[in-house]
Length: 132
Length: 451
Image (spheres, rainbow over the protein chains, first blue to last red):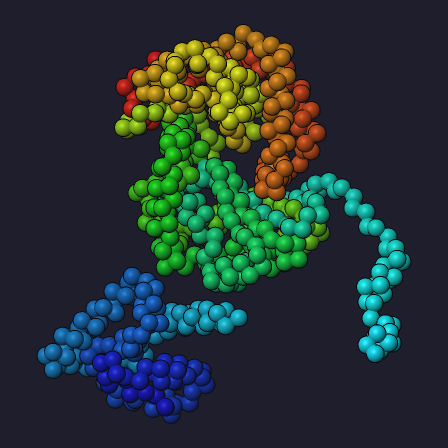
């Protein structure tokens, strides 16, 4: 099932689990209304949207993710930095955003996913070639 | 005993004899006929040229009319980046795969660019030509120019520029073109300083869209069959059709650039407008270049056949070098003298060199003319000896004229240059508006209007 890393901002979250499973969770286009409403409930229950974060802001930074972040266009990277700073500030104050300002399920963009996929594909290609 | 036991095995051994017997049935020797260069033009405008020289190694090149003269003021330096970006990720293969794939078959992929053309070439053994051809097509037609890969090129651009700055000749020649022309040919082969990290993926994509069109490309092969190239050209190289953006006509203006630095050797070149490629005048200028002297033919020799050298030797006792400078572009050219001298003697050397050219306007002796023609023919023919030289000649001729002239035809054209043609060429230099570029300690170097 979907992971629990959304609740933790530290680096001991189950990141591989997160990556594989969340990619499957959005995939089928023929989601029934029940499945979608469950997802929405889960997204809100996870809680990172309360401090203004998107899913890809919470990903654990291993070497692949670091390379994918290096490749982000400047604007996307700056937006990510802003959200992280705001979240840290709220966390320090033990506060959350008002309901209107929280990230909604529909607004959440998986901006890092394509870059991360490409980084992993390239790494796998290098590993394949080294085996030969 | 061993010997008797061995005898029964005789029929199953004597392998060499068995094989030798088979070869007695003589195989008809395959006779290789010498081939001519074949040139065809596809409906899309793409030129295909090939020569099957039966060599075990093949070489294929894609020639594009997309040299630095086609850069616009907004994207100066984009061709330098394109030269460095030949190995970056394409739609069909990642950068890593291109590198390893080409290495795996023992081939090589390279880019050269001049002011007129860009040349992407691959070479490898004949059997593996399909593999490298695939990479070549990917690189020329479908590069992706990923933003992070392009920004990773910046250190390589800086390294290229630093290497070029080490030879004074590069600085002088680039400066000369910048001073002699108002546009097009004044663009430098290297990225200007202010654009070093500013050229990005969009510039490169736009340049490719506008300039890498079928009508401006030629697919040239050495050691491949013509039909194979034709197929590849029809299937893959007609992605962008049309002429793309037209280049501007180069306007000669005649200026001067002086770079004062601490070097004790002064490099100086004085030129005036010459002839375009392929014209009879260009041939006359080439012969004139060899009449005057175009580099020593014997290392550390005394250069007795070079008029420039002998003339300047009378003007100074210090070490020097003088040779005739000639370059031809599609719509213009430059002709003049390039001198290297000690800074105190610079003025004398330059003036002596120019006066030697003036002396040629009065006429050339038959002996000198024949000698110059022979040297020019030898230089051309020797440049065709290597596969790179031959590919270059085939590609440049296919691109500029659509026809490949055999070496015999070129030799005939050289022979048809008369002494009056050479004298007229010298006259054109003497009377034309001069451009000059110098670098070194320039205290004693005259300005262009003082020559």
